[in-house]
Amino acid sequence: MAGEERVLVRRHVVHEVGAPILEAVGLSVRYNSRLALEEVSFDLVTGERVAVVGPNGAGKSTLFKVIAGVLSPSAGEVKVAGHCPGSHICIAYVPQRSEVDWTFPVTVADVVMMGRAGRIGLLRRPGRGDWAYVRQCLAVVGMADLAQRQIGELSGGQQQRMFIARALAQEAALMLMDEPLTGLDVPAQEDIFRILDELRARGVTVMVATHDLNLAAEQFDRVMLLNGRLLGFGRPEEVFTAGRLQEAYGGHLRLVETGEGVLALSDTCCDGGA
Amino acid sequence: MMGVSDVIVGPLGYPFMVRGLVASVMVGIVCATVGTYVVLRGMAFFGDALAHAILPGVAVGYLVSGGARGPVFWWALGTGVLTAIWIGAVGKSAQIKEDAAIGIIFAGMFALGIALISTMRSYAVDLAHFLFGDVLGVSNGDLWLTGVLGGLILLTIVGLYKEFLVLSFDPVLAVTLRLPSTLLRYLLLVLIALTIVVSLQTVGVALMVAMLVTPAATAYLLTRRLPAMMGLAALIGALSGVVGLYLSYYVRVASGAAIVLVCTAFFLIVLLLSPRRGLVWGWLRRPAE
Image (tube, rainbow over all chains, first blue to last red; front, side):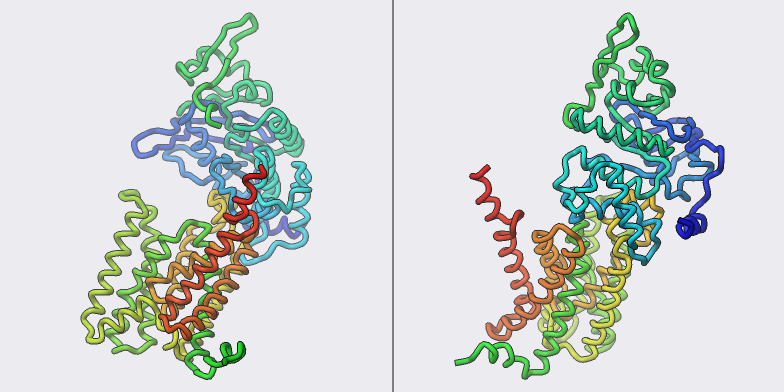
């Protein structure tokens, strides 16, 4: 749509060709006197899927909020496609389900439409094209028939897929998902990964915070091991070594050395309540 | 015996009743619409505090003008907007919890207002009017002011519908969409302040929070979409104004109190009988499950 393209160029920056979709350089975030993130640097390649793992309080949410431009780092900088994140509307943050008010009087279609608010522009109402776009986004996540549901009536997996549809409606190039898998059963998790495969085909880069080391190892291109500092970033078999996992989790992780390598039994610190 | 039409038409023979009815309908609609966000964002305490904190402005306006309505209105308006911004800024500083800070501002300002009013000769009567409203004393000029400002408030709420929706449902999304979040947040606070000032004469500062919260909370129990919630809240607000005013005419109780009591009655009925979310619905459903 040419008209929309013009609006985009006028109001927001153009992505630099060839620049990594995300570049973090020496990121530190200080809360009061505590360092939540310390000297974190990495690059993301367009279209890759990265798992961010680490114990509670490792700074996963903090990292996402800095990338989204919600929080300013105390030191270092983030560049999204070559620019600071504050000038982009292509970054979607998918909140933890526990942080959402599910009694809010909105339907699934209303929430997905919120993703388009930045593109529609101040004082203007969504047009027929926007509603059609919202329907398409819902179809991608397999929720076309649930468009008019009140959000409180959705299952956990549906809630998560609705937010993915909202990120699509936002036309996000970078999606940050805060613990989207926590509390979902296996079929619901498989649905999410099918949709993430679809996103990869569209060139959307996805970062997922998770506590599930097995899923992180199986389903992601690269994994990032975080505990305040960046302890490792690369292919799962390079990062999930006994030494690094021990360094990240201390006693909270049971490791078994097998013939084929290290087996992490579970990250026991966080999954219990979910 | 009096017919039903006499019951309704009779009081309309008094111009002050007609003006009072027009005022309560307008105030009911504006308060309830803005109140939808007050309820959804959990700002009932803020609304109550802001209404009370306007009292010193009202008192100063009253003292400097010797009782004229116009200056009272503008002084209240200035105080309301400044206090709204002040409280909004206090919420961000970290020395003390937000509700405690609001409580301190609210009580301090309210006490200052009472102190100022107590220097007047007709202390008790004037204080009662400011606290509980004097809808039957509304003039034609007041009606125009209420109509114009109320219309502006509603236009803003409708014009920035999707922005206020995003801000209220998911503030982080508002930031990632690069909406002017801070500006919108303060604008909403200022709109609440304007609504309170516009409604001052109808229900007074002490009962204001009921007009903001009760119709919106009632509508919340009846619907699951925001536009419907706003429409229903406005309808309930307007209806409460009319029924309350008639009630005060026939039963001879204070008009502001009557309006709020009708609002509360609507809420209780809906709380009991609303489909799906009502208490009776819950009791009937439980044995079946």
